[in-house]
Length: 136
Image: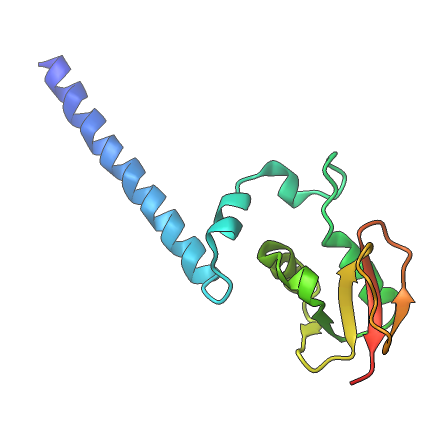
């Protein structure tokens, strides 16, 4: 009798856990529907993603200082940086209310990335990112 009750309660709890997991995934998708990507979903479970001082320093924290120090409200990304979907997603989220704008003259680029002839380096004082200004 007790064993039957335990089996019933175990099967109910198993379904409840599955239901909560599906709801969690659905809410994650709805919250990030504009930027939903499997990489973003998987990386959201990594503990280093939430802190700046973890041994793996996050590149996107530098973007906040670059925009703040140079008093810039709109920014864009170079093609090399645009390949990393997760990184641009985190930069956009971190820097709100400053906004991503495709027509902006200011670009984030990787530190080791070459700068075009019609572009000037505005700020190069960070470890991973730099800010450049390009004339259209």
